[in-house]
Length: 402
Ligand SMILES: Nc1nc2c(ncn2[C@@H]2O[C@H](COP(=O)(O)OP(=O)(O)OP(=O)(O)O)[C@@H](O)[C@H]2O)c(=O)[nH]1
Ligand SMILES: [Zn+2]
Image (cartoon, rainbow, N blue to C red; front, side, top):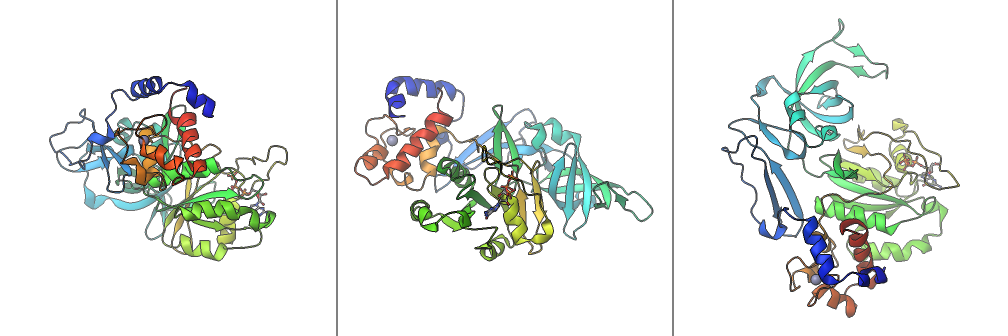
């Protein structure tokens, strides 16, 4: 890796980086929080980014209208005249094709379509409405004498509806496929980053990526190391120590023996929590231990490739008896970064962050630049060399052009 870095001249690397980001708004220029502008027309998409006090970046893309507004994916607000008094509020449990399952506060589930205007403005057709969204919908039709229709899944659907508005999202988890961002969960309060001690073994780079995503979207992360029953816990002490010293919560668990399941159950109370991690690490098994009634399908891990099968196919929000809810996301083997820019990464890493502002260049990549405080801190061991190496890998493998 060091060779690969040396092979690129500083100038070439920076020129490539600038080319890639040409036309993009510089984060350093954007310190103002976006103010909704009534005069903005539908075709005036305003991109706005701001840096919060902690250095995390949030992004807003807004189209605003004259009076009431509706929201498509990505926080797109449009001028749509809706009669609010006739709408019902709920949270989206799942999305299958054109139909979203929406649960109201009294526990009823409605099968809803999405209003066309929200779809036509969406940049991600699959993400107009996603699991976890808070929506307002119009009840459109009731089926059957008792107002209920039975679906093949045996679930009672009490009515059909039309989603008219999607509330602004916080805590978004997305994944990249063919260069496009797909939001897979919205309004995520906490992220359980699940790894397993064995079968499959721990991949710190995956944990690092998920921690960055959590930091970027201001989602509280907890690193869960499952299948602790398969190893001698002493083997994990160093790894737990590294993350623990950075201020992250690390929780060894076993769905098999029940270790720390009670703690997890308490943590999930009153939160919308996402579970992310490679296929086969035990996400479904952990949820089943926490709430046996869920009876989620558990995959068998192939001994040959130790990657497991992708039993969980669609992103779902699962209400828990404790009042919280969990997202059961598809097995994510490569948790790709999407909207993190190379210049932001160091600021999202708690151990690099303190040195970032001391660099000579405001958009220093901390790779080859002279007068780089981060490199100085690595040189005299104020930053752990392994963590800096992980940072370099992350940039070169994911964020800088080959
Ligand atoms: N020994 C041991 N095995 C476990 C534990 N948790 C899960 N497993 C096993 O690991 C395999 C995969 O578990 P799943 O719960 O299906 O894993 P997952 O992360 O939900 O997998 P995907 O649905 O593919 O994403 C199953 O054979 C489980 O029985 C654990 O704590 N200890
Ligand atoms: Zn630097």
